[in-house]
Amino acid sequence: MYKHILLAYDGSEPGQKALLDSVDIAQWSHADLALVAVMPNASSLLVGSMEGGVFVAPETEREREAYQAILDEGVAKMAASGVTAKGVLLVGDTVEEITRYAREIEADLIVVGHKHLDSWAERWWRGSTSPALIEHAPCSVLVAITR
View (cartoon, rainbow, N blue to C red):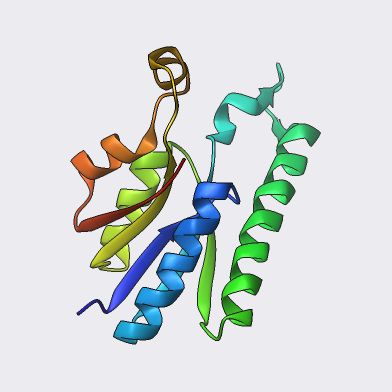
């Protein structure tokens, strides 16, 4: 039985499916649920000056707010389904941050959404987090699939 479930959430259609699956599993197993969104590393968006000062570009703050809004939406949807979830915004490489946080909370299950793409070109261009996550995860991974 699962005690700590981590849902990697991005608000997409596959993410919505993963959210619903996570709610069902959490209710069934009485598990703690953590919902995470991963924002790309902001260090590439930092701007430095000759005096050595560093500030975050306004675009970074807007991006952070957008990711936080997606995260808040997911937590609210879970609450509406009767499940309390902790929402955490992570910054960095998606797979590294999800696996790091899974270790931190001692997750027994990571849930992530995935959309099948029709052509090999789409799959190559877009890439996929799911296979890399499966390779690096410290626990089981459930991939909720949409077409």
